Image 1 (cartoon, one colour):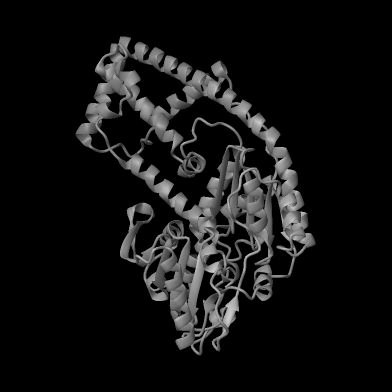
Image 2 (image 1 turned 90 degrees about the vertical axis):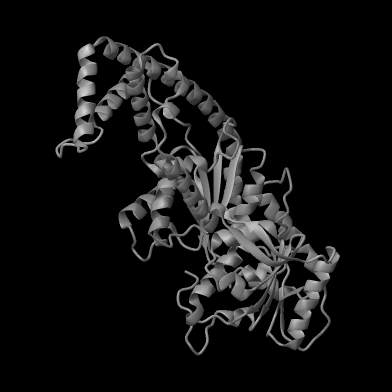
Length: 512
């Protein structure tokens, strides 16, 4: 497992525990990259060279080259932030002026309609006939009248107010790809930390978390669309205060609802807009999305990423992404080729492709150099079990020793998860409890967000018979790693042999 190598040694709580020489076999780890949050960090290239000088990283020309590219991008952000601030001021003024003009046009229309008694009779006759028949004529297309009036109004607004201001050209982002363990995520995180204080809107997502957020936002938008409210509750206050009769107000309210329907007809752009709105709606400026391990595992991922990333890139968001594959190689299964090709074209237009060509898996390199920390214990025999229990006892004792049973933590989409044993940020599970049940990325994110240290016991050797459990375990490790948690394991075999399979067969294509 490519990420266990670093994950097992992140916690300072476990760092102080040393194990005496023993007969059972161990694998030792230590992380050289300090992931703590610090303000006013220098650029990624300066950070990288400093870690090399301190002996915490081994010099790699490929990593230095990527750090240099990221440093160059960082240098262009300050001016871009200023340009985007000015753009958002102009955009806000344009939107306000356009909305005022739109309402003025609507009131002119409704005044004309209210004076035209024949128009209201025709409208009432149509409504009466439709209600009586409860069936729309087969040759009548839904919403054609409103669509035509909506287009005419929008065209008139373009001539009165002008078209939407054009965003300033954004600096090209980076798409960093290469072998596992080559340092892609580390370099991206150095860049992300350096943007603090330079760019107002900055987000970092791992693939699993991003997909969950997308699902969450889509669910909320669909729910709001499906809610049917009485007319009085949906009519905006500004309409109710107008000096028109109720029929005119109903027509005006219908036009307003149609405009809103048009704006959220394509749900993915609406979801994309939510990515950077966490209580910062009034803070205008540039936006950066750092996306770790971009992949296209299924049709939904392709469609969702294509729609959302296209929207973000078109609106000036700078994307820095990592992946094990080049953009054109993300979809070897050939799913949704046309949509996927649009996604690739967008990425290639807005991001420089940077190959980090190192063949070294630095996570294993770090493990081989470190002998002072033991957080992966194997096999499941007496001595390893005793050492695992000792570590659990040492950590919990330092935190007061008051172990809580079956505490409940919140999970996305309103769900909850029971934690069998926990104490002040440290939790203990069995493999079967976390990976043998129908849990997923949302549950593992909740664990990682609530506990800085996680103990997992009874991890078996993976085989095709338990492939679903193996996939859950990989997702769990990804989320613990992504949230910089510490992991202490008791397993049946070494990490190298954990995914080699059993006599039942090896695991096929699991990493992909």
